[in-house]
Structure formats: C-alpha cells, structure tokens
Image 1: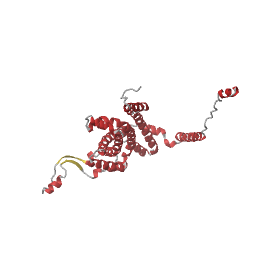
Image 2 (image 1 turned 90 degrees about the horizontal axis):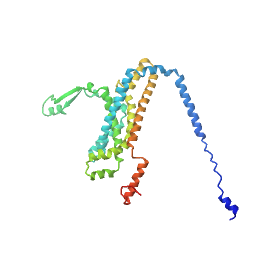
Image 3 (image 1 turned 30 degrees about the vertical axis):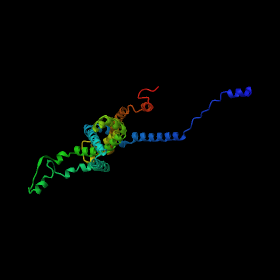
Image 4 (image 1 turned 45 degrees about the horizontal axis):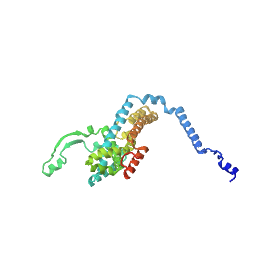
Length: 325
C-alpha cells in the first residue's frame, strides 16, 4: 500500500448532509384546522343566538347552583359509593366457588348491563304503580292465613306510602347505582384476576384467611388496574345524572337549566350553559383521576420492574434477594 493510499484511507469522511424530512400533509392539516378554528371562533363572536349576557346572567342563579350541588354532585357521589360497594360484592360472587352465587351474580350483571340507564330510570321512577304501600313483616302472611283458614291475616310491623319512600331522588339514585354496580363488578373482577395467583397461594400458606388475602394482598395490588376505569365510570356517572329528567327529579342541573330555557323561550343558550357546567365538573374529576392513578401506580415504573426482574434472576441462580455484584 502506497503512502498516498494510506493517507486517503486515514482521511476523515465528509460530514453527512442531513436533509430534514418534509411533511406537506402535516402542514396541510394544520392549515385546515386553523381555518376551522377561526370559523368556530367567528361563529361564537358574531352569532347573536348564543346570547352570552343572558346565559351568564342565568347560569349562576341559586336554583342552578343548588342543582349542581344537590343534584349532579350529590347523586354522583352517592351512586358511585353504592355502585362500587355493591360491585365489589358481585365481583366476589362471580369469582366464588359456589355455583349458585356465580349464576346469581352473572344474571345481575347481564340484566343491568343490558338495559339502558334511561329505561331503568323511567322504570324506577314509576315503581309506585306496583305498590301503594311498602310494608315490613312476615312475607306471604295473607297466603299463610288462607292456608290455615284465617281471612285477612296481616303480620306486618310497619310500613310507608310508596310515594313517600320512592321519591325522585331515591328512584334516580337506585337506578343509577344498580346499573353502575354491574359495570363495577366486571372492573373489579378484572382487577382481581390481574393479580398473580402465586401471591394468594403464598399468603394462604402463611395461614391467612380468604378474607384477609382479599383485603390485604389482592385488592391493594388490583387497585392499579381498577382505578383508571373507575375514574372513567365516575365521569360517565356525572354526565348520566342528566338522565334524571326521566324520573323526573327536579333538583338536578340539566333539569333546572332546561326549565329556565323553556320558561324564557331561550332554550339554546341554556343548553350551551349546560355544556360549560359539565365541562367544568368533568375537568375537576379528570384532575383527581390523574393524581389517584399516579398514587396507585407507585412502584410499577420501568425502573422498579427492572429491579424486580434482577432480583428474580438473582434468586433463581442462588444470589438471594440482595443486591447483585
């Protein structure tokens, strides 16, 4: 090899001339979106049918605020508490070794997931048609009396008028909570099944009961899977409170806004006010959901997963659970 050839081989290569990739489609999409956004802003500013001053003047009145607190927020909280509690029970029944409990839980989820919530609320709002009174005592007392030749046997302790008990609030709460429990049962069941069975077997070998294993071992780990869809269900429940028009329950946000719109013949501005109210309330729930998910996801990042994997490998090769060198 000559000196000139060796010099040529040792010469540094020319720098690469990087040409940025062009994205004409991206810029076209940005231009289309910008035009659409400008058209939307123009619509908001120039169209007098929005009646912004009328909307702002009426969307914060005391009946509306009371509808937000006593209707939307209160029913959302109560329905989710009842739905989650009952959903956990139904999920445990679905996972039970008792075939009767499994069938009953499956029938419950089948019925309440199949029927739309609007239909359920309409049915629960008219339950008073079935009974004039709700009474507590010995069941089938009249039939038992007829069997023994006693007419008009009534072994009832106390009772209430159905219209006094099945108010709009109670009927709406029952309809939403029972429907929510069916969905929460499937979410909780999926979360429980996501936990490795080996941990339950190890806890059982230590002498823990099934209730202790579920409460101390399974549910804390399943929460990482349960929380995100539960947050979505809570947001859906907040929006579904607007369906209480079918009961009807008058102390509810959308009912109050709709009533103002129909009384003043300004329906559309009040519907837009409802959009803003639900956007505001849902945004608060989204923030809370973010922090809850971050809290229950502690220890499940990439670093922690890699550390657990290293410890597992070290244990398999006799390194124990300590640090590897």
